[in-house]
Length: 113
Length: 115
Image 1 (cartoon, rainbow over the protein chains, first blue to last red):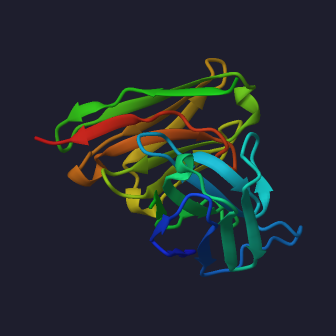
Image 2: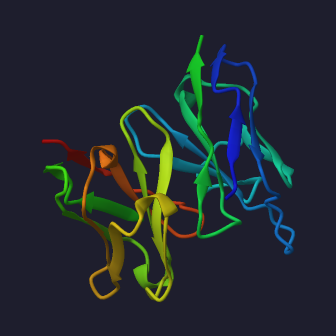
């Protein structure tokens, strides 16, 4: 089974400053079609998760462009170019290559200083 | 607008059973695979089960050991999860989510297993 890790597990950021979260997979998530089957979600306090980034680097509909995803294979990064107060919550990466055994990372809690 | 709404959660005794439902609207349900994901109190997300668009392919997390059954009724735009032999560690919010990228989620339904 694929194991997903994230770092850091918590992050305190000053509004307006950038933030980055790393996600690593125990196996490559690069499909032969060239897509990386890695998605990012944000779970805001008291809410259900919402899709932010799909296939490694594609912003979901309605997601602000301050969010970006990068990486390939086993190493991925979610970057927030300028953190806003509404970005607090827990960020999860999820692998979708080795289906059906979907696996989530442990989550990274982002708070505002 | 895409909408998913779970129901059927509640308090159940260890060893008991429960049937969760997920009613959807705003998209052609029969075109999408569907998933159940759960979240224990204060914990992360755990994938539970997935079902293909036609219901022909069904998958479960190994840890469930055959206690849960996923199903769908495309005529009723509904997804189901039948939980049996419930244990305390099944206590969680259960979410339904759409498609291979889990691009839309419901608000979840809480299942509490306690005597």
